[in-house]
Length: 281
Image (cartoon, rainbow, N blue to C red):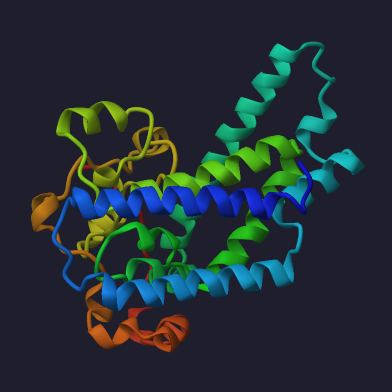
C-alpha cells in the first residue's frame, strides 16, 4: 500500500458505505428526523469536504505515511521487539495494533469530553440536532487536525505497521458511518451485534441532550472499552424514539449555517465547563 493509493481506496469504501447507510435509513428509519436531510445534509457534507481539503493540504500522506516513516527509522515499541519468526505472530501483531489504535481513539474521545477547550471543538459533532449517517462525518476541522496529530503520535510511539494503519482507517470510517446511521436493526440482532461492534442504537445514546447520557458510550468501533471502563449505557432514559438529540445551547435552526458551525468553538463562553464521563448507573 502506497500513500498515493490510500486516499482513492478510502474514498471508494467511504462512498460505498455511505450509499448503503443512506439507502438503509430511507427504507427502514429508526427515528423520525426533527430537522431532516434537506437542511442538514448540505452543511454536514460541506464540512467533511472542507475537512478533507485541509487534511490533504497539511498532511499529504496522512497516517499511512507516518507509519511508513516510523518503520523506515525503526521507531516505536513494535520495532524494538524481536522480529516475529512466523506469519502467525505477524497476524497477532496486526491484530494487537488494531486493538491499541481503537483504545487510543476511545481514550481520545473521552479526553475531548473531559477537557473544556477540546470539548469546544468536539461539541460541533454533538450540535447536530438529528442523528444520521452525515452526523458521522460532522467534525470541526480543528478537531480533525488535532485528532490526526494524536494518531500520528500513537503510531510513532507504538511503531504500528502501515498495513494495520490502513486497515484501521478503513474500519474507522466505515463503522463511524454505520453507528451514526438512522437505521433500524431488529432488537435481538442489535443485542448480539453490540457485543462485538458499536451499533447505531448504542451510539445514539451518546448524542442525547442529557449530559450523563452524552458522557457514555464513547466507542466508535469496539464496545468493549465502554464496558471495561464503566462508561457503557444500554439505552437512553426516554427510549430511542423519545430521546432528544443534540445540544440545547445550539438548538436554534440558524446554528446549522456552515459559518456558525466553524465559529462555534469560539462562541458561547458560558458553555465552557468541565465534562467528566459518567459511569453507568
